Image 1 (cartoon, helix red, strand yellow):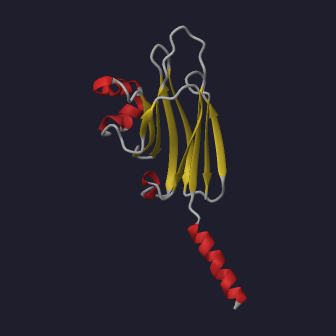
Image 2: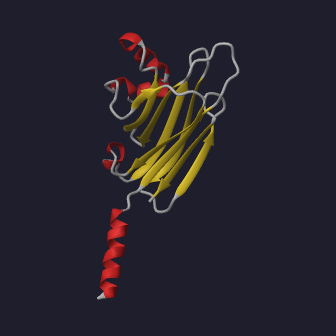
Image 3: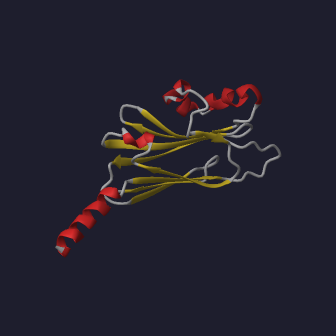
Length: 168
């Protein structure tokens, strides 16, 4: 009887665990006379270029939604699906961030992952800054994941470090 209860408890624990995806984005500090916080887009893309939006940081406080006007400067994101997105996007849109490190966590139960089919994907992070530059970094991964994996990519100007940790 105790063995049966132990097996049931083990199965219940395993079933309750969900796969997780954690993203860490570091925005570097620039010592320049005129500094503007970058606009940042974070999204997943499969082989057929289908997009799942995860984050969009821009100036949400500008009068008459003027901040949305500059989102097209996130060129890759804009072409791949940003222009089709209704803004502000609930759960995705947020204010631009000052230099520092920021973390995003997602469960396989979250909307961006609940319909994610098994296959090869890329995490893209794009940053664009007024009177600055534009940069895109990408990290490939396979979904679903068999074991915990962490990958890190270093940016060269507008992004310092972007890391992706996928946990089964």
